[in-house]
Length: 90
Image 1: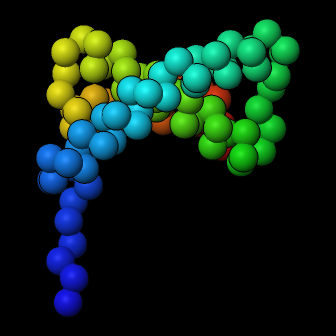
Image 2: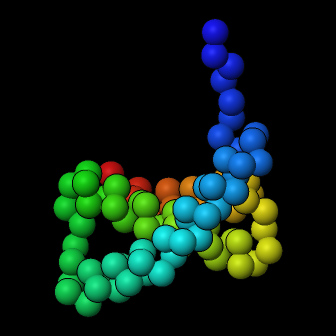
């Protein structure tokens, strides 16, 4: 029988999540800046999912830069992303 492990309960998993979200900051920012420059407007679930992902990455890295730990940064980034008006429409 497998034991359920919380994603953030294991130090290596926490660090892997941190590495993933930290390394995605610049590409996510570039992508959103380009989409904004092109006048892109989200339509449908796939677009909203993309925006949600970019918002989580952005807010996560802001929180980490402010000195928050991984778990708190991840939790706050989710809350702030789901609070975004575009996300709330869907």
